Image (cartoon, rainbow, N blue to C red; front, side, top):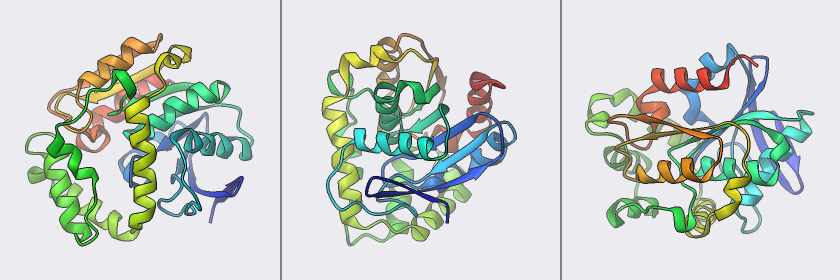
Length: 268
């Protein structure tokens, strides 16, 4: 298994393709399998490094509490251990939190940045409605299929879950493959909550690499206003709005998502 150690933490990653390194960072409670629709097209142009965050997928569990900054250091450690100076970085939702911290803490490691369905946090954050935010609190007695179906019905764009049962079924399959413990999920949730409450504020202005913000205008979990806040805070950022799309642009609008990301990253 391709794993690497960063301090006491073990991080799992898959590699595909060749060329400029491209790191994919999943969101809260998710694994590298969430990028299944991106691997083949991206690997035709880039060296894709598809990793699992600590406490998720095939990565090791954490022995203690941690922060989004710690998870960003994990990503930097993977790049260092692979002998890579810098990479394109794509992060979705909590993965976008991690990508922001990576760009601030390890600027030399990031060539271009893609922030998907995410938020700057802190004073710049626009919160979800309470009933939507409540989806992040896991009921230990709820089975994975019920949880996935309930979540997809809320966080995706209008009618998506009903018209794309194959995507819902795939998410259920992925959930059963990597059954994250409640304790591990809560550690990730606490780290993500800290970012939402505090963010990195004015340090976003330190991000000087070209940055693409991708956001669905129907995202109920990270409302669309968060995209505009990021673009305003990061000097070299631009926004791609996906109409009728919710919190999962890479799944809900795969062809458009893959196209705009590859056009932005180019052939370097």
